Amino acid sequence: MENQDIIVFGIQAWDIEIGSNCKNIAATMAKNNHVLYINQPLDRKSRIKERATEKVKKRVAVLRGKQPEIEKIDSEFWVMNPRTLLESLIGCPTGGCLTG
Image (cartoon, rainbow, N blue to C red):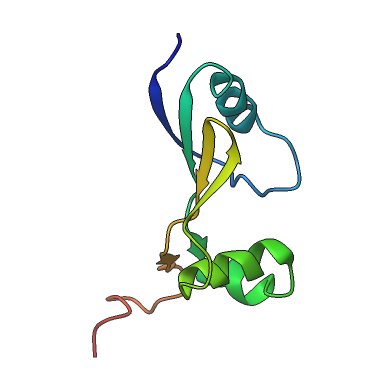
């Protein structure tokens, strides 16, 4: 496969410290294709618990519009950090978080 436009919805974040098959496959495909790797959005729990880490600081900067959503990794490889914050429903009272 060559000269194709490929979008990869990352199961693991691009900036995770450990390796992953998803990242390795995307990087391999980018050698002969145009690849956009889309990270899962930052979740509120990570934003609070890992706020001192560089990866969360970078994602928060994207959320605030201080850094671009898309970063060029290589000549044919880009990573997107969506300008979105995920909320968890775990811990919400029975009936939901939005009921009064």
